[in-house]
Length: 251
Image (cartoon, rainbow, N blue to C red; front, top):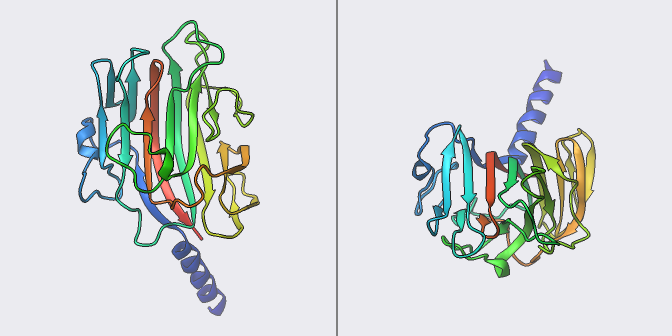
């Protein structure tokens, strides 16, 4: 009996150290506006989700969030963001999980290819199509190969096509995990493969399934807290599909 009590206490303590901050699987509605509340969003709502220009769109299709840009030039951007704080105290160690697929709309890409989209985690974000680069802590970019290949890859927060920190190419939907540390000290977390990993302050790791492809990438802005997020599809043309977006504060 004493053993069971101790085990229960341990499990409760473990769960209390983990707080789910945001979760959305896009199963409840086909209307993207139902996932937006600019003033008092729930734990599964954005504060902004919109598209600019006649050749940009954002919608829920087949229970996934779909962003499309069909013109390489002009303000045909699509974006979703949340600029209401996750919590009263900003997470020190943040885990983000999501599913992603990206397909290019261009047959002949420039060399090197331009970025399609940016995903930013930070604070002080705006409900618009601005990049908010000065208030971003963690940033990664999404690139695609030509339309004929159907491949995409993730780049680090320097958003340069020649960046040395880049993932392998992926084909079709992948499940990703990002862990970012803004605690002021090194932290240990359990990876998707079940092993323990150390992560230095203001660094981040990223995984595809159980394979880690980014390790200890430097934060874009170490002084910015982990309270908001924004996804901006602003360049080239193509389709980006996301699903099962979850943010969790880790102990």
